[in-house]
Structure formats: C-alpha cells, structure tokens
Length: 178
Image: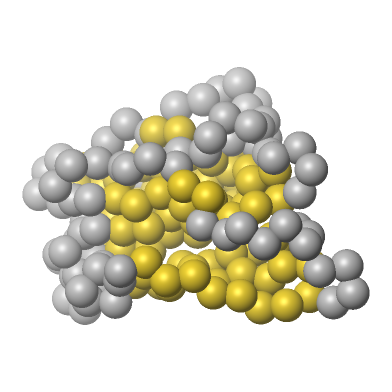
C-alpha cells in the first residue's frame, strides 16, 4: 500500500500453467485483474510486489525453469509494462524479493545457483533509465544463500538481508547499497 491508500496485489492463477496476475486499488475501488507475465511455457510463482508513494510499482517472480522475472506498474493510465528477465541466465534462481524507494527507484534480490552453491544476486532499478546489470552482492563461498529480502529508505539506499549456511549453522548476513 502507498501512503495515499493506493495498492497493488499479485497472485497466481492456475490454468494450463501457473501465471502471475495483478490488480490495482486506487481512488476507492479495484481495477480489472490482468496477467503481468508473458510466458505460457513455464509456470510462475513466488511473486512479490512493491509500491512507491506515487503509485508506481514493481512485481517479481520465479518461473519453473529457475529464471527470475519482473514487471513494472506505471500509474496514470499506463499500467503494467512488459515483463523482463532479471537473472544471469543460469536457470537456478529462487526466492526473489523487490523494494522501491520514494522516487520509484528499486532493488531486486534473489538467490541464484552457480552450479556449486546458491549466491545472492541483485539488480538496481532506476526510475529514470531501467534495470541495471545483474550483480553478485555476496562473496562468501562457505555455503548456500537462502531467502533474501531487501528494503529501501527514502534516499534510495537499499539493505539486503539473507541467511547463509556455513556447514555448521545458518548465519544472518546483510549487504548495503548506497
């Protein structure tokens, strides 16, 4: 929910595959539900959504092939744009999460396998340009990263938190983007 009461929701719809749908709440009423991902070949799930104070939004999800996808919502009659692949094409992404700051800039994080272990990947979104490059934001190779989360502050700083197994116990880690 945005401070003015506008909101975005995302959910799964099961038909021949599982797809991601969304709806917007604004001006006291719900809009029409719409699909926001374009693939009928793979199921989509583990969807997350974020909204900024002006009503701009971002949704992120995982497809059954392990790819991580996102779509953005632009208010004022524009609506949902075209979905985009965010991961680095290894086919091992999972548990995506997204956050937006007050000006529509955002950060997406997810765990992604390199064939040996699951690492933490991220992409920064600029409301003025688009998604930046995929980046590895965790370099501890002691074990798998698990279920990352990200939050942003009003100035565009982001903080990603995640668990990581070191073979003996799960540890909590954080990485900050300024």
